[in-house]
Length: 279
Image (cartoon, rainbow, N blue to C red):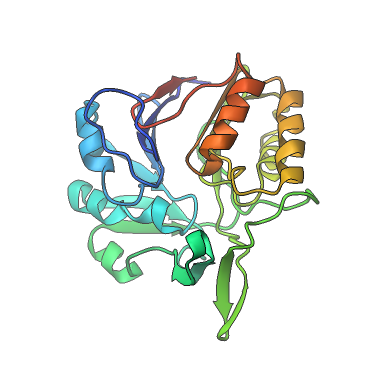
């Protein structure tokens, strides 16, 4: 397999002194040499100036993949489209579902979904490709499709709700996607927010690709808001993987990032805005 360079364009924190902006969100550029894929777009549109500050031209983005329909992963999409023009966008058919939250910072119900209408994004150049099943986007690079949920202790954040027929229910976020890249030394798993559970996602990656070795896990793990049992069992699971690189960010939370940095001193890598990882 070839070479993949991952540049974190948007994250909650900035890790390099280059005048980048941070925002509550996530966007990572995957560069394969002959193709560039943008995974998520952050919240505010900082993805554009940040890329420019890092010497990257987002007009050269070939495809966009959206991990799920929360605002902090899709909010920068309109600005990207206005900058880039027509581009294929891969997402789950439930991207525009009624994603709500309740009780964040003592707040009541608030809309957390895509901040634009589908028609607005299509008018700006988004060519949506809807997938529920896995797709091989290029040799060795898989879009996860819906993640089967087998792990008993992995639960979705109960503050995330959806409305069905006017009734609030747990939001299952079935639109939660990850990317899996098969390298000669094992799998690189790229997470958006891991709402499906990190263990469910990695196990699905192994089954889907037939590659049992896991080399790297990058992105939002959602371990910060998880309950203590899920946190402990997931750390045990990560220990058993024999990773070369663990680069969590975004919804992992600062407390959990600190803990993971201590638990995995050799493998842990910061993945804040401006950081680059090569595989």
